[in-house]
Length: 398
Image (tube, rainbow, N blue to C red; front, top):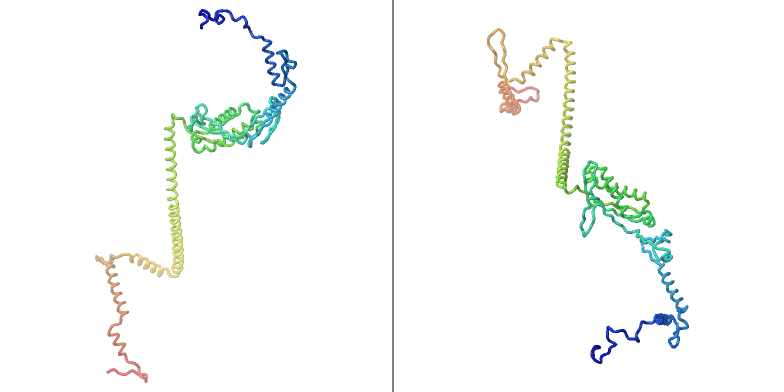
């Protein structure tokens, strides 16, 4: 039955006043109930007839239990483990106290002391001029573009690998280690690249430039007492800007062609020069032989002339005639035809020496043949030649 129906309960009228018996809860009763619950938790007893409890506060035993538990938890938090290859830096109220070695260690719990664990065996890598993301290396122009000595621009990308050598120095001597190392690397890179020409930086000078950059970075970081050692500096890429890539590739190709031509010329030189030197040595030897031969001939002529001079001194006319005849013989021996002018006449004597020489050769050959082969008459005469008798006289012929 609804409250507004006849005979309904008027106490349920939402617009009428609350039940006179209902009222706000008693605050003292609420506090007393809470104390009773806490007392039961720590061993307290409630009083009879809802009256006040004679022992409303927690017992001493419960407080001691809570205190001991808190102390144990606080003490347990003071133990820590330093992994192999790491060092623990202990700070007491923010001030350095000690550096602990790998293993189980203890320190005063926080907030008295804190521990910073630093991995000194890990090789960290700093990328300068590019960023690696998803296997791709994107260029960072403000870091990569460098001005060379010959006022050209190159795009250089470096990867600096470093380790922590001293955990204390690494944490306290440099405020922001990564940012500091990055700035030092850029400064060293610009200094070294700016001291070399572009061709040197992009070709044969890569290894030298990387070594110089590493030395420069290490010197600056040591001056900061940073506790960082540079393990390696890798030249990831070095090339001219994209706007001049095509022209630079043409220049590289031309340089390669130049080197190829130089190599071919050197090979040709290595082939020709030894041959030329051998020919020159051969000509020199021939010249020396000719020189020796001419000198010997001249010395022989001098000796012969000296002998002739001695003979000429003894008999001038005879010697002169002999020299004349020898000279004419040497001249006429190479002549086939001789024209002789006869004194006192208009006739000119013609001597065909070539034909006479041929006939002379034929006659000489016949004579030689005749002398080498005996004739039948000679054989007969030799056969029938009378022999001397035993008495020493020849027999008469018949």
